[in-house]
Image (cartoon, rainbow, N blue to C red; front, top):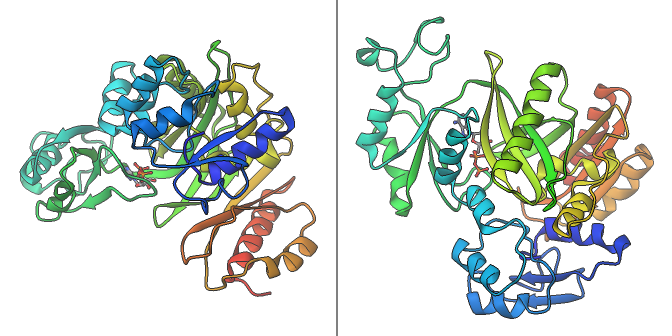
Length: 396
Ligand code: ADP
C-alpha cells in the first residue's frame, strides 16, 4: 500500500487474519501505519524510481490516498504491476474536473458546474445559472418555483475548488463576489466552479468492486461535517426514504462499474431540500464514512478493500446492529488521551476505540470511536460522549 496514514494502518490490520504480507511505502517512520507494519519503505511517492523499487516483488499495489501522479501509475502498469484501482479509474478521484466530465457523460446527477478561467469567468458562471430576467437582481432571492424548481442554482455564492490536491475542505472556497473569487486562482491549478447546493444533509454511498466485477453496497450513511472535516457518521442514514437510498446505492454501483473501480469507492452525496441526490465527490480507497463498518458491518470496508484488490470474493456488507455511529476523535488540549480510556470503557462496554498512534495536535484526526445498538439517540449519545471525553471537551 502506498501511503502511511491511518487508512493503511487499518487496511493492514484487516489483512492480518488472512495472512497477507503487507508492504508499505510511507513518507516517514512516524506515520500512523509505518509504526505497525514490519515491511516499510520510507520514500517519496512522487518519485517514480522510489515507486518502482517499492513495487518490485509486490503482487498488487493499492493506496491510502489519491496523490500518486497518474503518469507514475501508468508506468507501474507498463512494468507489469497490477495497480488497483488503476490509473484510468483513480484519475477521477484525483481530478475533480475529470470526475465531473465523466459523471456528466454517464448521466450521474451533479451540482451545476464548469471549469472557470478567472474571477470574471466566475461571475459569468454565476449569471449562467440564473433564470432569464434575474441577472440584474444578482441572483439573490429567486422566488420558489422559478428556475430549477425553486432551488437557487445561479448567482453568488459560488463554490470554487482547485481540481487537484484538496482534502478535508482545503482547496474549497465559497465566494460571494468577484473580488473573493481571486484567491483560488493563486495556486495556478485549474479551478472548478459549482453552484452552492442547498442541501439538507450529506450522505455517503460506499461500495466495493473486484476485478471480476463483483460488487457489494453498504447501507447509505449520513455524514456530518464540522469545519469541513467529517465529525459523525450514522449508519444507516436516519429517515432516508427507501427509494432514495436505493437510488444512491445504484448510483454508486454504476459509477464503480463505469469507471472500472477496483476496491472501495466512497461516493459523497448531497441530499437537497427538494429531495434530489447529487454527487459531491469520489474517493477510491477506504474512507472515513466507512469506518463504522469495522464494528457495525459483517465485513468491514478494510477487509473488503483487501479482498477486492486481491480479486477474492467479497464479504457481506450488511449491518450487524440497527444503528452504528462513528465519531472522529480530534486532537484537543490533552496530549495524553489514554488516561481517558478507563472512564470511556467503563461507561460503555460496547464502545470500540480506534486510535491511530498520531501525536495529538489540536484539530488533527487522531482516532475514532464506534458504538452500536437499537436506539439511535442512545447510540449517538454514547459515541459523542466517548469522543468528547477522549478529546477533553467533556470531563464527566
Ligand atoms: P474535499 O476535497 O476537501 O473533501 P469537497 O469537494 O468534499 O472537498 O468539499 C468540502 C465540503 O464543502 C463538502 O463536504 C461540503 O460541505 C462543501 N461543499 C463542497 N461542494 C459544495 C457545493 N457545490 N455546494 C455546497 N457545499 C459544497
